[in-house]
Image (cartoon, rainbow, N blue to C red; front, side, top):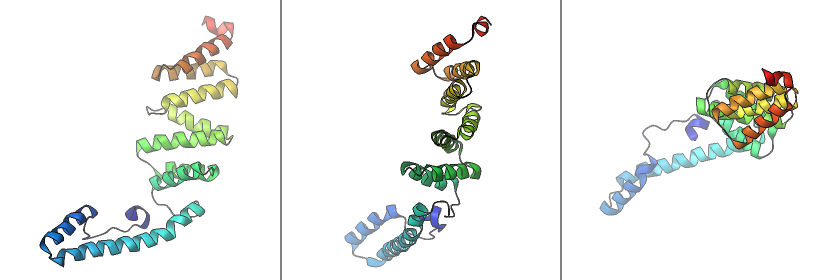
Length: 197
């Protein structure tokens, strides 16, 4: 965490995983020379913890003012803010993370989370844009994106044909009971002229 948040890279430090081995070696041999590395490691832990104690609370108090350099950090803070019901701040951090660049798996999840937040906040255009983008490329949320688009076209646009197309696209990815029921209901709502095509 100190590397990610503080940008501090330890050099020549005893790895934490080696400390028990070095301590037990000391107990066995009673040669204290190797303990110096352990003490130095622990001193660095205390110093970096003190630095983090000054930074992390500010990140939670003023999340949009803190300079986060990595998209993954923005996503992590955004998820915490979402759980704390600070939805506007969470959506802003998710957007910043998406713009910053993320590995694909984290990108898809963040786009999905951001789209759901935008929808919950009543920002249909922003949510629909994200769902549309998620629907265009193979990812774990593609089917869900098609389903959300189907709901949007049915309930907001009153476009049953598009809702049916989106439902069919979702069904090609996953045949769930809910999607089958949605398709059946939409087919009944569709105009008789379209059903003949």
